[in-house]
Length: 305
Image (cartoon, rainbow, N blue to C red):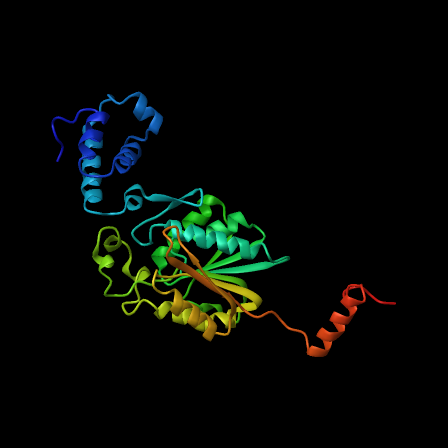
């Protein structure tokens, strides 16, 4: 319902700030009026037509009820780009940007053709960002949700990213394909976690948040099968809950990976873990021969007359 006292943009902002965050109010006003921040600041007393008041009133009710701002705007920022989002996908989190940064550092260690896999791609923010930041990599992204894949495909198209999308239950559709890097932001919240029913999360797709069990089912499935889809020397990186670091490291080790690490998020909580498939090792005799050549002062890769 419109309030008769609201006649201008400034009136609406003052009223909205009593119910929601000031920045959220401004962003909603910018979206509905299609004005920039500078324009709103320069012309705060511009009239707010009845249709815009109605639209803003509906958005204000939804935001005040806890619905994520990204769903109301239809987009969210991630790694310096604007991505489309909808209630079919999770809203991008800052922690996932750190996962992308780690993934890019791993891709930079490989020369030649590089293949990377994004498991449970959702809106495609990880896969699309990897493709745009590291164009030499061939990116494959999978999700079980057709609705999520529609959003991801739209993001790849609008941002000009080359990504191959597949509908799959984790690795099921990949057969014998192997990758130099596997990244994932799987559902890791336990079913009985009270945060699932709090503001924000209760509006997001539940299947992308929880396995309806202990929050580790997806992590178990990913770590158990990762070695079958990684090249020698390839890396696995995945996001997990703040209290799942120790279990994640144990699962990675049980899968035969090494160089296991965990990284903390901005609040100091363990948030990302990963490991590496052992590289191809030479036979001991070959290792001894190479070592002797190196000690003799020449490279084993050089042809010896």
